[in-house]
Length: 380
Image 1 (cartoon, rainbow, N blue to C red):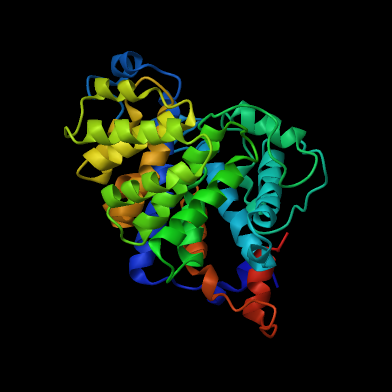
Image 2 (image 1 turned 30 degrees about the horizontal axis):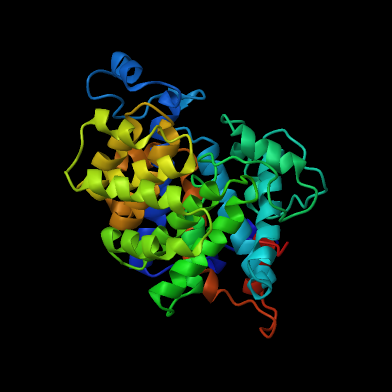
């Protein structure tokens, strides 16, 4: 039997959890798609093309409206790698064991981009079989080169980059940790998400700020889907940052975002005071500003996309946060209907919301349902 022969094996997450998990991943994809056509434009150029309000609706990129970029592609493969790690029981081996399996997922993404990893990879599982993922959508040079140069799964990148390629793919880390640490204290959850998010970011980016900003974002996502208000989530993560060497740039960027958000919804021109989002701490700051200041999903994502800088990544990260905060129903239906790979994104969100309930494990008898999940996410 193929995976698709067993639709009854799909588990339905609790309603409130489904709202937040679907909102997080779909929200990021919508922001990504909204920003894709203007990624390399200045605010002045965006306004010259789309009018004084800037880009406010999907327009054509990569031959269609609602097209995602490498940001959403890598987000999906992050989720896949984490779920494979769960099936393998890699958590017992610590973050390094999880990172090795996620690195294999990134190697599969690398193949979808027409590139070759240094070692052999398993081209199995359901995600790699999605043909629409086998397209280039302006993949980040640092991610590509680091994955091509890796000689073994899980090794840390040998560069000094802190590009936003770390953070734009990290939302699933927070979602995964929130389920893994269900019932644990917020402090423990923050440490887990910070540690794991930083570890996985280090697979492609060697600078400590790139790693820590990605870990901080994952930790904020984990708290928000636990129903912690965003200002409190940011405060708790900031309090944990001094445990990490090289945390200062991330802490300062988060504080600048809070200060600007406290003044209300800013004009688009003010976003650039936090940077352009090409590096991780600036992308985090812009996303936090938009999520903290905006009253709703649509306002926040439009703010995150209309500025001088990396519009698709900042809007994707802000969209992850806003979707996790407000839930899938807060995302305009016209955007959800038009988003590329909506079904795949929804399935990944639901799997991240339910994986701790799958009937797998060392002491669990084999069954059709267990076999379904093991074939969907082979543990390697």
